Amino acid sequence: MIRLEKVTKRFGTNTVLDDLDFSVDAGKHVTLIGPSGSGKTTILRLLMTLLKPEEGTITVDGEQLFPAPEKQVREIRKKIGMVFQHFNLFPNMTVLRNITEAPVTVLGLSKDEAEDRARELLEMVGLTEHVDKHPAQLSGGQQQRVAIARALAMRPQVLLLDEVTSALDPELVAGVLDVLRDIARSTDITMLCVTHEMNFARDISDRVLMFDQGRIIESAPPEKLFSEPEHDRTREFLSAVL
Ligand code: ADP
Image (tube, rainbow, N blue to C red; front, side):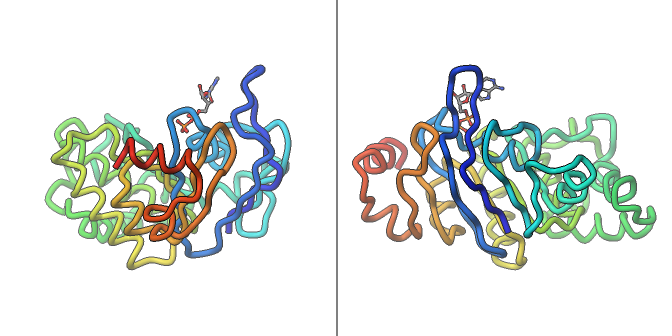
């Protein structure tokens, strides 16, 4: 579903991703871990086409996302949903409208269809009674659950999660992670996730990739990577965060 081949990304003279290859099969959940600045978020931003690599190719669902003509990029982008660290909800829209806006304008759903789907998703994330509120009236955890519902409303084949609990007060983290565990269990969406929540990574991941300085230094199923890491760098990182 996702394939990066020989991808290099630089900012000026800083090589952030260095000749990177990896792929994620359809329906699998892959988590990226590693020290801050190792290039994890850059990968998600490349897949969202917020950034372009200097070299390499990126393919999603068998179609080239980079390099590719703009029209093709727009079509592939519809298959990819993302949830950000800082929610990025539309502050002037109700919860319901936040979720229905893109399905109506981008996918061409009728308002009724989009609202029916939004209400189902709000039930799934436990926010049914908040449909008519504005984001500022919700806790951070509730806002993040709206952002998750908004991403799912586009029926993405791929869901990118960028440190989605990092900006939350500690007591709000569990509710968001429970929703994501539920999605991982009950849907066939391919998930690529950057997180510092190692227990969550262990629960949902089919594979965990350890990054260091723009390279993958270790890739293994979570039960292996967390209990018997092969690299000293992985061991050091895990002992600092666990
Ligand atoms: P991580 O997600 O692993 O913390 P990032 O992918 O955010 O790492 O960042 C990797 C490196 O790229 C860091 O050195 C960061 O400073 C640099 N970087 C990220 N975005 C930009 C940007 N827009 N301009 C310049 N440097 C950037």
